[in-house]
Length: 318
Image 1: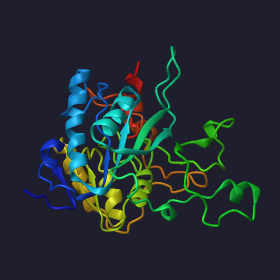
Image 2: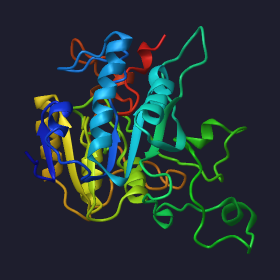
Image 3: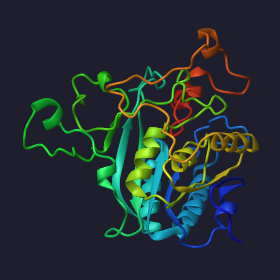
Image 4: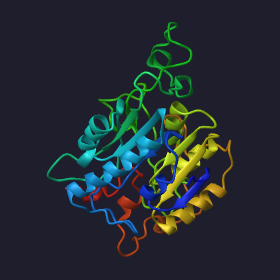
């Protein structure tokens, strides 16, 4: 059985991906549950370690099967299982790690007995270490020679970004500098206009847009097995890619479809492409008490509601 493209399917991704033919996906992006006890509406995010890793092997195996020989896979994951999943992808499935990207963010849970968590992991993996899609000219950023030194030797096209992505460079005045070639993307906070409002974890379209533009071409098929808020599919549609997603929650799947129906190919990505020079748009006409109201029973408090899609439940980490 084959599935139609440009759709979100309300279905377990394991069952859904089995309906796909082998080697049809150009780019896959996965932001799975982290097994840290996050309060999803239909998924139990607290399994025994061996059960969680066995489940990860299952869906990773399906992703590798459906990827084209020159396909690319990106995985977003937290600290708890980053090392294990990297080894599984490399040693058991033969994927090649092109980059281990660190995404720095702020407003994580304050810790009193250890350093506060302020990062997530993004693994950039390919099937073939010599043949893969990487459109460097689509993602170039101004270099330090251009922005700071005015060096005439600077390449006018800029540079490919570094592998450390910073959401607020001003938070590290003595470390990463604003003029460095890093990734500056704000997380989707609760007051941002980009915020969909019905999903507690949301990844910014600008970040996904960079991955999609770098690692696929117009007309390619982009897969997201854990669609969540639908950000991957929305970015793919806007960037003239075909897309396919699976979502276990019927409520989320319905909302994702509404999000996709509201946009067209060629629409601009939500969020600011250059946070160094502009501030993200916030919701208009929303009173402060509405933005900070208590979450429904069974949901996490405001900090997890405004956390990005790739690192839910920041306050739960010990």
